[in-house]
Image 1 (cartoon, rainbow, N blue to C red):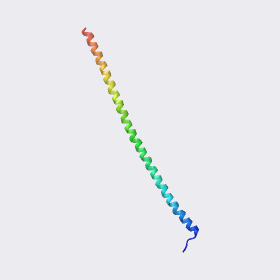
Image 2: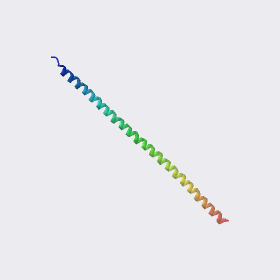
Image 3: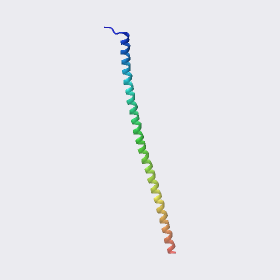
Image 4: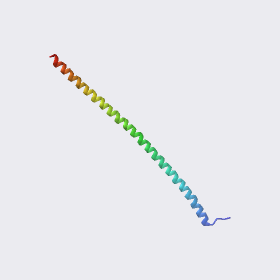
Length: 85
């Protein structure tokens, strides 16, 4: 049995539509995967940045503690020198 041109065109459009739908689905999954990768990368970059900030603040804290301790020691030294003189 031969198919009419209308049936042939509808069948062709149905196959083409099915392929387009599957391509669209693949594109959606690729887009979601890319978004997941970017979100994960953002999280890791944020974590790395957080550790850098915490380390920098820790170093500043240690440096300031050292400077203040040295100033206190100098003040004690001056007070001891003035008592002995």
